[in-house]
Length: 206
Image 1 (cartoon, helix red, strand yellow):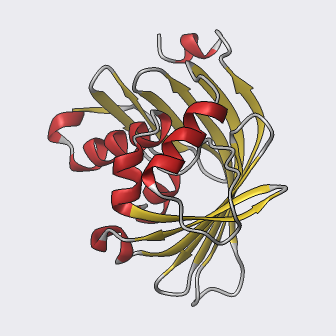
Image 2 (cartoon, helix red, strand yellow):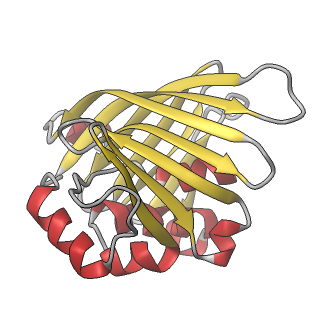
């Protein structure tokens, strides 16, 4: 779950153009984000998550859907091989699992998990550059495809995460995220069927 939270905070946007391997400074990152990032009111996509754990011989593969509606509504849903997920909307977080399919509600401000998730996710969607660079060193690995490496500078995140590598599709949305954990585990998320600013997403949160 902790790995999933870190991954969800890193799903989105930013076509950079500077020298590969160079850490991005705040002024440069701000300029590039404003010049090249899409204007996001909503989006949806499908994903496949592959998790490798040092003590397990075979990787764990799961699939699902992700939805976002500005300014701060999120739905993350696993559909295979189990059904579980959560919705964060209007300050309320609802969770469900295979064993407990009826959503359980809580106030996000009183929910440590919900508050952390919401703050981190919105930080990325709104391109809060000062917050991003307070938590990570951002390095451009390549431009074609656009690939970034993020190394945590926040000790709390660094307890879990060794590094993240993110590749982007042409519209600025993430296509691949590779999380390397301190314990040797790895989680890869592949995103596809991106839909940007689709009005149908509104119905997900009604």
